[in-house]
Image (cartoon, rainbow over all chains, first blue to last red; front, side, top):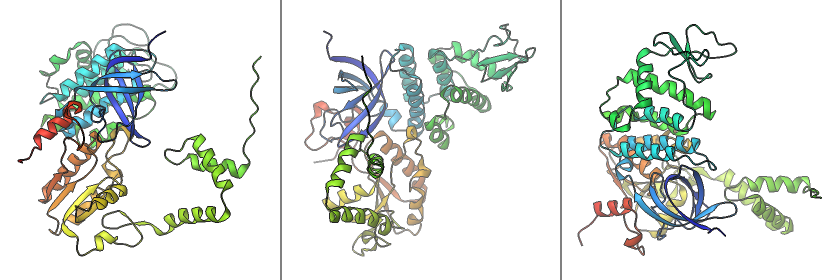
Length: 257
Length: 205
């Protein structure tokens, strides 16, 4: 008979008050699964779990399996991301990333690459001067690791390689459409600058440390963000709620200043 | 062979009462049913009293135009009290926090109730709270210090940083309630953020 207790490392994506002093926590576990678990009594000031289950905290957990929901029996903070939590722009950006991770993570299908991507991004935002390109990098790579990567090399219609400049982008079709193809139906086609296409290809193959040396013009970052926002909206079928606050405080612009 | 259990619905008014109770926070369908059947069994006087008190809250309770706390008269008792220190405003999340602070009785300044905190993942931004409503209170130079007394959570801290950024240019001192180890807590179980803040906020004995 398998044990009802299991241990895992996880990052807390979200926590909401529940009843008298309890906390309902959404976790991204190390294997990339989304787990919702109850932390009984965790909102009481003297609880051993208080503080360890705040959103944007990497924790070592002991959980016990329940019929409807697991419960957190022990929580030990591994990384509190204090620098993120002490900076308004960094907090807003990290919460946006967390909402996306929560939206794309699945309860039943583990995705270790998603956990790796999210934890690396938090470490990057935690650094003193995260580059502006962090958000589009995360958006694109989130789509990549969850299987929704837009096609940025070939035409989605004729499958031939696309020459930069002879292309348009379709969110509905999921990638580039060459100028020779005429998709049928109610398909939106939007222009995509050559610089933005090159930037997407760069972000697709880049490792995170390389981003520190990238200095993209603000207009290019905006174009990438706009395209990737549309793709995320298409797949989620809703707006990302935390985007409003991140944009409101000018998160990406403010970090560079 | 498995047969489906027949489902006899509650009579119309009972079903409606259950449905309404079920909309209250923290009340699930089973609790709503229990409450509804408790109300049915209660005396007519008790039910009338409950209905009157619910309607009374909606008819008579308003928000104080100054601090946005719940009150029967505007301005509220605290804002109208001449003995309160008018140079201090404590910013809290909701009216229950005012009650908690008043029960302790240590603080003698005024309040400002935000009615929530910034919660980006739930789509709650600064414009959904009573943050901007605080600015007119800081214009005439009476207020020297704004004490941010929101809960020490990630969202509470984000709200505190936002308010600090908004009102610092007005030359008003902005402080935060101390963060650190709880009375009765144990160091061994403190998390990284709490310990860091406890060190940052240490005081000479």
